[in-house]
Image 1 (cartoon, rainbow, N blue to C red):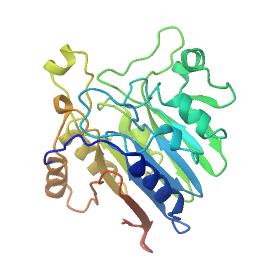
Image 2 (cartoon, rainbow, N blue to C red):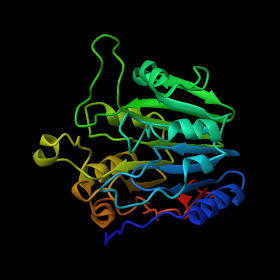
Image 3 (cartoon, one colour):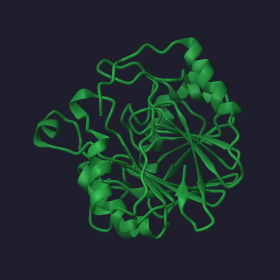
Image 4 (cartoon, rainbow, N blue to C red):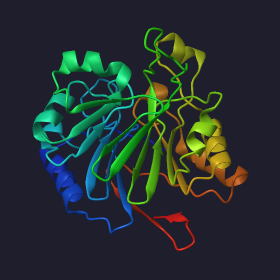
Length: 289
């Protein structure tokens, strides 16, 4: 993976990235991604701007800086968080996002909605909860939920709701699966397969006893993520959730190398921090950069 050094984010850098996101207009039928580190993305599709699992706050030990200040985000249409960990739902940043983008909707697990309404004082009409078999539509964007197993496939005993989710985003002919934080579990392939994703974003940092004992819940290994993609055959797959913390890191080259050997026809890419990637579909249906 190479060494990642913790750099300070300047106001100028934050403003420049904001302008880049505003100025870049993906052609019709394409989708643009900016990777913000860990599982965080800005996605521009169908004329909408989606912030998904973006981690803004300074936190001791993070190796990748926040690339944009939440108060700069005046253009968000949709802000999504897959689960209630700071690097996915950044509680300190979300009220600033709500103020900066007053028309944005927030998508969260329904399990968290009562608590987040109370703790973050967001408007009920803007905070939309999802669980399995539920979908929300915001303009041309449809978002559905797939349960995630963040070490465990947990469900609340009283409500049956899931605290960990992955999201399927559909817009302008694109289907994007962001797995959130998850391990494999029985039935996950079938749940994903029915959506026929064009793009899959999969965590690869793995899990072990040391991390679990310290309270760090695990995810798929790079081999498991590659096998999931190899079996489901998305248009393209990319590894995520491997770069932010030293104790929880992985090397994306292992994922790419394993995929190339075992599933040589499967397209893949490795995002670069803060750099736009535009994906388009060829006439034969393949996904390309």
